[in-house]
Image (cartoon, rainbow, N blue to C red; front, side, top):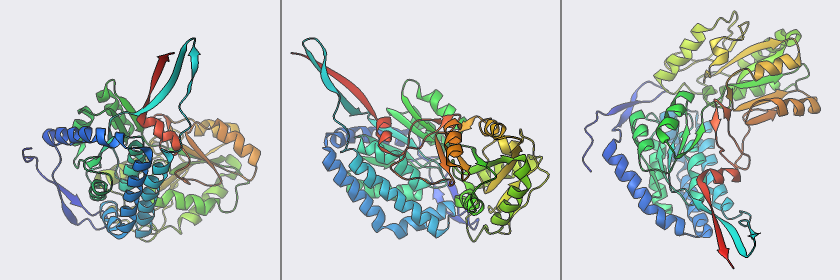
Length: 447
């Protein structure tokens, strides 16, 4: 393979703005070679029994946990996350490899029976082949595990393309995967958007993409007849009723500012009843004042994201915009509320992806539900009330792939996560995610 002639990408630590290294983006020759090696490794990997794959995935989880400090340093350098956040997410990634290691062994028996006279039929579930996992910068290692763990457990090989600003932890994972799983079973292609486009156009069988709606549409167009699994972000409504429990305000402030609000399913749009509006604004303002940028959460990830955030806030027609104390230099942005704004405000319609909540109000619960379902994204949503029957009714009618009652952004490997509408399609997490990366083959034998 010829050395790349592409200019290096300069990497920056989002906490300080200081350089932290350079990255040479992979181009056509390296992409083609990497995918070919993954395809060659596929025969060895899928030939293993589920028990053997389980042991190797457990070994990979062991390596991640054993090198927790090293992963934490790399995650912090690329994302700016506080140490506790980064460490917690790395442990979640290790847990996902363990979860899917066992999940692949607990499938129910394939359907079998005599559906036609004189014939016996059954179904084989087979790996798709080579999976291209294009993952974002907000959770570099965790998203690689969300996509990679079920794909590997199902018998596929995986090529991960991390975001250009957060490549280091994925590269370490690939090194550990070579040790635990075998060469070329899980590989990483560092690079920029062009690297991702080359990978999507390459000889891969499925593209698992997490990112923006516009980028997801581009991936779908380039994928042609191949399968695509998309998670394209959210704009989560939060229905706060007058009998919301006392912990509502602190819980929303914490969920909104976790990872500086750079979570696809983070709470984004608080919607309450009109006669309760001032109380909600005052309670959230007090709760947000306790969440400080630089102390409780990190910076935005990169200059482009900071510029986008600033553009949306500047374009908002909100008449009140209380911001909490905290760092505002560089890529740091304070916890902020936007109130007294129109229902078609840019901050309402767009996914802001920062430590910010909009607050809207409606005259009735039905009108509040209509506002919640009025945007094209449909990923997450939450309802806050002591009235359980009302909460259950509203979660059933919210257009979202994942809903919460009196909590938000609470997730575990056992429960599925996925979007609808502009938030994409497909399933992450839970045993259901295994089906994203397998295909059925019917076998019928004449007796």
